[in-house]
Image (cartoon, rainbow, N blue to C red; front, side, top):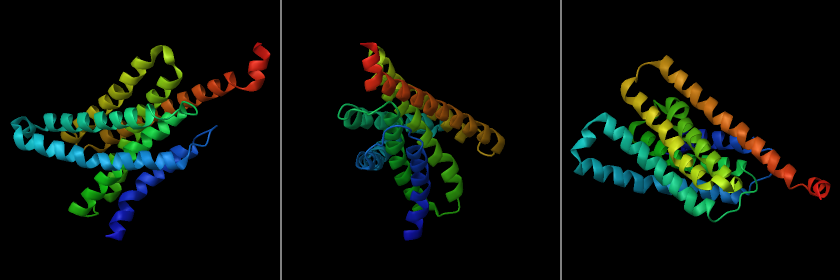
Length: 229
């Protein structure tokens, strides 16, 4: 069981460490990131329960399209909700990149528990594949979600728009991901291209968050303020 737990959590810790080490200016308190990770982990159980109830009571879940759409909607909505309520409204980000760290933490908390449950139920034959696909994709969805949450705290004129995009952008990506699951299961090239595109989208958001963070700190630097007086 210890080996299964280690294999399940290792990809999430590696990805979270990667995005944490990519921060440029501020050092985000590790305790808050740990809490965000735990929030995401706890979210797994109500989401699975809701999915089970809907599947048991709704004949529409017999179609793969509805099943994939339901899981994408539930997972991204609840991740967005917990980020909005427990993180965004309670914490003042040091810079826009903090949103990416919180988004990745919540998403990877969810992905870790989901991955653990899968490996316990079905064995570790697909452990590497799951690290490359479901776990990585959740992390990247979280990066995109967190980017817009970070912008929402620092671009006040369009805060509501940014908050809506924080839900819709990863939701669209998750829809596309689930659509591939049901329509292109054995097409490795198509999966590779999709994941490459997803990484490009996520890393472009990382780059934009870094630019926003630099501009924010430059404008609030004492030397900059003294020069503008």
